[in-house]
Image (tube, rainbow, N blue to C red; front, side):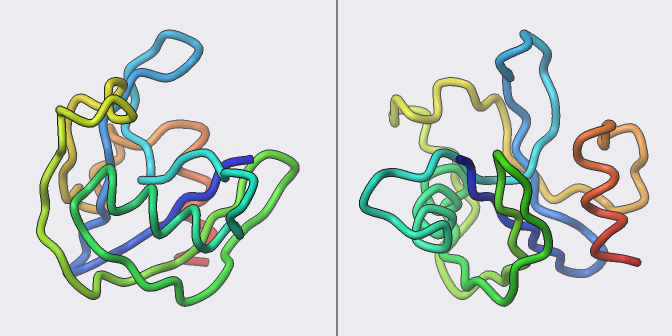
Length: 119
């Protein structure tokens, strides 16, 4: 299972550019695998910090399916930083605030989730 968070500030959403299992490079929402001892919320907070440098507070569950929890969160501390020395971040190329209307950055996985938030 994966836990991820959507965080929007000033009409921009925080995303990570990463290699995914199918070999593509995509913009994705920060998050990652849930470890055995973690709740989905705890995993999301840990993964978000590892991937972006930010401390996030989970506000609500937006979406859940058989493989993924997607939360809505807000930044409560830290600063934007990609820790390239962390082996867990080997698949991440970049971290950036993406304008929510930059349709070229969203794909058939990320776009429907963003629409849930706006819907």
